[in-house]
Length: 181
Length: 259
Image (cartoon, rainbow over all chains, first blue to last red; front, side, top):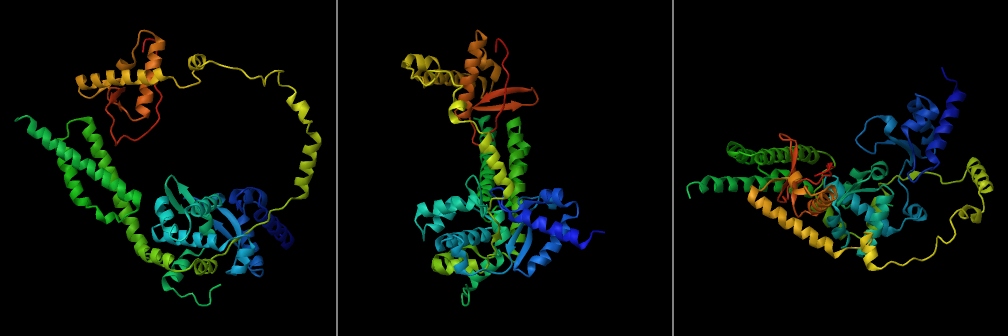
């Protein structure tokens, strides 16, 4: 039986591991948490999740591929509720980049999760110059929001973790934009 | 005339099988509606084709067609599941919505569905310690580069002939050699019925000639000017005319002295 102090100490260590970005990708793999926190790391993360709830954050487990073992999953902390447009802008995003990300994710999701890059660029070119579309898509692929396999573009692991895709599609179809943002 | 009739019929069935494979591949690649392919009638065509199949190539083609049809059936299963899921929305509707609304509204919709990752990019005290330690141990740049021999940056000159001999620049003779061996292979293919053993083609007077020929043949195969197949029944490689349905793959073939 672990003491409360010990669990708090492990939860603190888990939060540090998840939040401190060591590589280009944020978050930490399950096996890294297991190595640092022990085999019961999932219950420590549940405890941490309860604690973070009061601060508007939550712990998420994301599978980057086909695997189903939590040791291979990536653990991240995300904002729990929606953010405001002003907060997104202050985080370094441009409205045009957000629009391209929204359009790409919605279009790819409606096409069963993958489209050819030519089709996607053709769609986005209706609103943005080609150089801007290509630069932004490259940046989104690099940061994990989209994935590219030869000439096919898919939804990336980061979009799956951060975006409520069904809500995005629903809002686009309903065209009910009142009270958003 | 009597003999050519079944050949013509077989050829047309073969073309139909090739068409089925191409259709399946295109449908999967484009993510189009997989129900556009009539799997039942395609299987009927394959059944007829298999009855008249006489060569290993025919059987391979049949296997390839079956494989491609099975991927279409798999895609049909996914298609049905996706259409019945909560995520299904008509792509044309989404496309028209994306085009019709302003970028600002699109960004606002997105932000309302977005919960970004929280992370900290910061230097820690241990990493600063590590950096200081590295800096203190690092030797001056002059002492690290001083090991290079003197005069190593001296500019050298080479004549085009010397550079060509060393293989540093493109040699026009290479294209001539390629064309010559390609012509020889095409003649052999025509006389041998469309398949020639690889070892016969690369055989030379000595080992150097064999290796040169093997290099030229590998260049021709890689650039799609001729094809290459492996026959497991004889455990030998054969040179064939190029086919669009050949899957690109890398193979290593050892060449003994004398080809």
